[in-house]
Figure 1: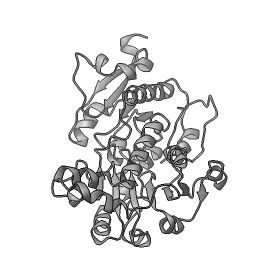
Figure 2: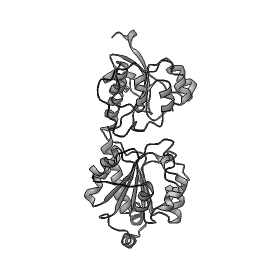
Figure 3: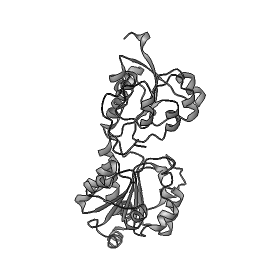
Figure 4: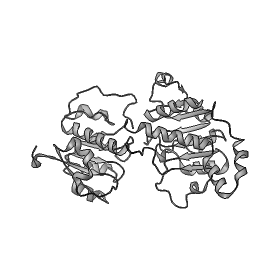
Length: 353
């Protein structure tokens, strides 16, 4: 395909090390797009700046940067597909894209094992109070660790509750069971047979709160799940409970979490994500010994970024070749667009958002 015939694809990704050319920086995406697309990198600080470059693009590739809001979507005059390089798609107004007839894709199955590993690490660190143990050693309080842990039940026989039962939650369940944990889950969009087939007990949301010794948040971020765990929910939990979140920060009401930790309403938290990232320097969570924090890195390994970017390139490439993508988070748009269905579309948990 000649250079003049190539389709314009706007790339809007987080800051990365600058290399000699766009072709070098986006080599992974171009493995699938090189013959059909010209990538144009846009570094915008306002919607107007973004649309000045993107209004005539046939595709947008994005991840953690400029939000693709409803007003941005309205200005994408030629766009066929928005490719998102993550599982969550809360950086895109999916409803607006659907209304505009734009397909939105994600990468729901690329770094599941990595996030499950990190989640299990947070469970174990919370169980053994690793932040407090480390602080005691550094302060010279060598002999205070054992009395604290003498009050913490062993992990074997404890109940792990999963909020949502998507790919990551299922992988966490498989890791937790060999540690002797009972696993329960609540997800109104997943069949109970799917849960029981994984050896997980399906329960109501209130029962999940009441029974969980460790509660791990895995819900996607949307209007239904924002602040899904707040004051009422923490009050319903055991005072000995530990809250884990390696999903989306705003699914937990951070002010309510801080209040529950300070009052002893729950025992501890282990968090890879926060409502504001990075957190303000005066965030009380930073000074709590019973809180373990990691900087939104659950998916990070040597494999994650290359494979994710290759997958985004393939998804966009499929749409530009007139085919349904492998993962469409707004499947109701597909019958309304001029794309060919070429394979069965897995829909284990609906639109995955």
